[in-house]
Amino acid sequence: MINCEEKISKCEEIKFDPDIIINDSDGGKSKLRLKNSKRIKVRIIKVDDCVIEDTTRCDYVIEIPMDNIKIVLFIELKGKNVEHGIEQFEKTINHMCFKNRYGSDLQKRAYLVITKVKIPVSKIDNSKKKFRKEYNCLLIIKEYVNEDIEKI
Image (cartoon, rainbow, N blue to C red):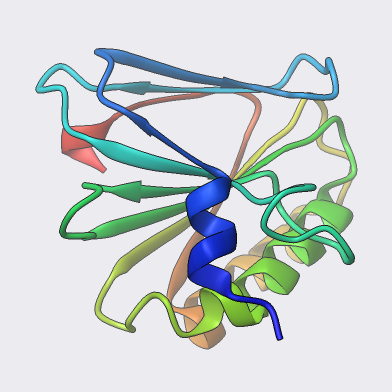
């Protein structure tokens, strides 16, 4: 049985920089930027090939603030395969290391950062509804994410 807390602690990085930038580790163009002017401590958990190594998963999970989590961001930096990105979120959200970690009262967002959208809008809308209903999670699909932590 895997010890999730142990795995997460080995795969986490604590940041409180005024600008937190997460780039595609595969060398792609996708990136996510969080403005953090109040230097709030956030925990960035590398999920892909660290917490979860044996199945489909998203790239990162970010917990804001680190000590008294109020917001959880699931991050997938993708080229253009939106459907696969959505599947990666579902597998991560339902994985034993994350499923019971976050209560239903937490604000959850899944950011799929892509370079090109090649999927019908109706499919995206259906996925957004499903995420809201099944996971209490807001699914956001964008080409570039530049968010202010205080306004999330």
